[in-house]
Image 1 (cartoon, rainbow, N blue to C red):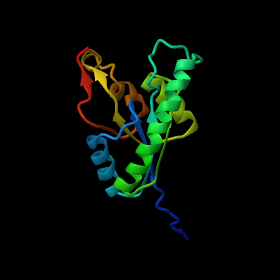
Image 2 (cartoon, rainbow, N blue to C red):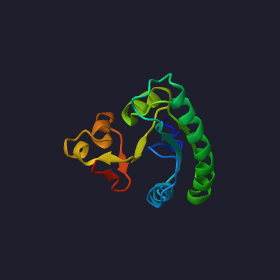
Image 3 (cartoon, rainbow, N blue to C red):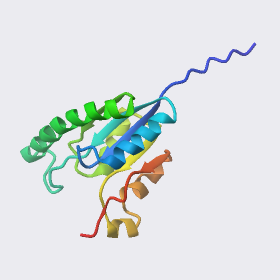
Amino acid sequence: MNIDVSIDTPRRILVITDRPELTPELQVALRSRAEQGSATFHLLVTNPARAEYHLLHPERHDAVARAEQQLGQMLETLRDAIGAPVDGCVSIRHDAFEAVEEHLLARPADELVVAVTSHELSRRLHHDLPHRLDHLHLPMTVVGGLTTTH
């Protein structure tokens, strides 16, 4: 006798962003995903300190503390806006790819939402974050045309 014990477990969605601010595009994308079915969201914000600072440099830690304060305010707004569980953290790492890889070791995800600024050259060379994360073989949504030409 086979008994179906399937339980509707929420999809774990990792949202990667390089700024602890809620953009209209990100809010719309997360609300749309929340409406598709049961999901929990975890925002991973990369460290806003300059990349050349060493991991132990005090500026990196100061930047994380400031970003965590902004993130706390953003999470409250986002929970109300999308009606789903949302939490988040700020990585000590500036490089989004490294932050995601490190984060997934401790906290697996079923889907990714990428909302980071990429340089036009990186995108053309397929070295932008979405292309770099393809090896994870996770469903991925890229939010907005966040590119710079610098």
